[in-house]
Amino acid sequence: MRDHPFVKERLFCPGPTPVPSEIGIAALHTDVYHRTDTFRNDFLECRRLLQPFFGCSEAPLILTSSGTGALEAALVNLTAVGDSILVINGGKFGERWEKIGKAYQCQVETYLIPWGTCPDVNQLVAKIKALPRCKAVFFQANETSTGVAYPVEELTKAIRKNSEALVVVDAVSGMIAHRMEMDAWGVDCVVSGSQKGFGIPPGLSFIGLSKRAWGQLSDRPRFYFDLNKERKGQESGETAWTPATTLVMSLLVALRQLSMLGPDACEKHHRLLSEASREAARALGLELFPKSHYSQALTAMRLPPSIDGSALIKHCRKSYGAIFAGGQDHLKGKIIRLAHLGMVDQLELLAGIAALEMGLIALGHKHSLGAGVGAAMKVFTHSDAI
Ligand SMILES: *Cc1c(COP(=O)(O)O)cnc(C)c1O
Image (cartoon, rainbow, N blue to C red; front, side):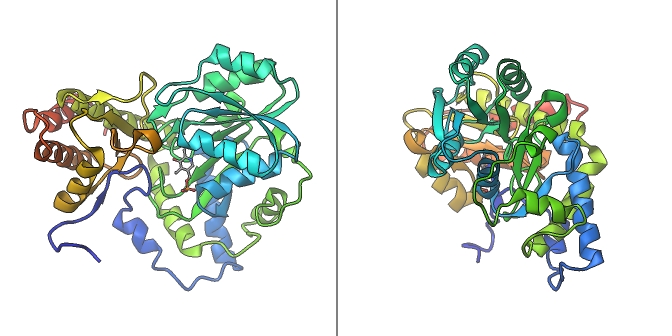
């Protein structure tokens, strides 16, 4: 229940993202049996509509799990015990690849980069050349903890040129906000999740594999996340286990909407919102946390030392219902993350920026009230994108 009748909670955190009512309402279709032609057709339409967002020749599989489940599925199906793998770790989610790899007894080599920075292609190539038997390289399309978008195409092409390793990309927060072209770039496996760019609640994840990856599945024991088994069934819309049927109903509505625009226009929209957010940060005197390669899914801003980020987040939620994400680990209290991922429009983002501005003033930051909102409005009025 709401804490206050006149405070609506609005999600400005990088997942879960807001769910528009028509997408949420679709999940009220509760009494669905999944072994019917009707459901199988809806499921197949979802898979088909996901495909252009992955840019792959074979439609992605839909799994019932949070995003991390699909990360685990990727690693478990593509590696065996003792395999050498390389992980790019530039934040909380790079670290997650590392942890999954270790849990499943891979030999994990890490290319560790400072939080807020982007991997360097030459350093990556040096790392991969030093690992001649590397089975796969794992990294993020968008490191959500720092707001950095990695240049997936460039990194993938460099890996493919210098190694036989499979390229596995976590695009859980990167997809929709950024283009993904698996086939054209040579990416072997891409993972995404429902509660980020797709604007539906958490509980579904998506995984696409290249032909090369399908040809190299490991013989490691597995059960729930057996991609070969899933692939056989999902060809005809049949899932191995009971899927989250209500979420599939929502997914279908969300995908029909996103498909009216297509991947390019979706990316353009997110680019516009991210530009507006960066201009707002500058106008408020907040430094952007990433040094370069700004994410189009979220904007991470460094707070002045005088502002306690945790108090700011609490204040914004209590007074305005605006839910932001703070920093994780050593960044706790030091940054604020404003998401503009999924079904967020210009006016909603302006409301988020307004909440941030009012919160900053309440905590003693000096800026001209409205400066951030005004800067974002300027970006919107001067753009023909929506
Ligand atoms: C949200 C997210 C995940 C998955 O998280 P879940 O909580 O398991 O859904 C994985 N990677 C990135 C980059 C994310 O932003």
